[in-house]
Length: 253
Image (cartoon, rainbow, N blue to C red; front, side, top):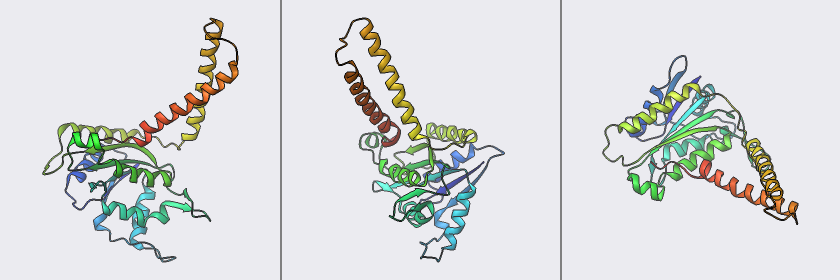
């Protein structure tokens, strides 16, 4: 397995690079690693049939890799411009467009990624306001469109003047670096999991309400109507909560 670190920061020796390097240091043989510092690659958007040769190089590295580490700081409440520019220039390559302009996963489908960002904002302020959330949302939106599966996200706050990583963050990066050694390729079975969840809710609700009827705790009048409405309402609420905590809510500390 090959892990590719993609660094989209202004500095090649800053906190973002430290975090990415620490994660990569946890990768063990026979797995291999490679780092791409985007500032060293003067890429430009493709112009029609004229493909940018620098993007060709980067695309090749991404295709040859199984896991990507997307690392970029948060500036002005959003993803650093270099990484955003890279995503924009790679748009035609990351996804397949249909005749209506809709995007679909293409050659990168079912690869995996781990995202990293950091900011000057203090830990408490970021926890309350979510300054780094938009950076993660941008990365997730691009990766989701490309069919790339999320592993985890790491964030570091209060980085003004920081010369080395705090010990707890260093250990967190190492832990996820070690976990990359055992990442198993899998497809994105989100729809399948939601269908399974619906049937689990339906069965458990039927058993629960059946027991209530058997114990004469509730009336049998309109049983199936009450059962169906309960299953639908409970499933929708549970699905929304799960979606919030697994997709919408991002790490803030």
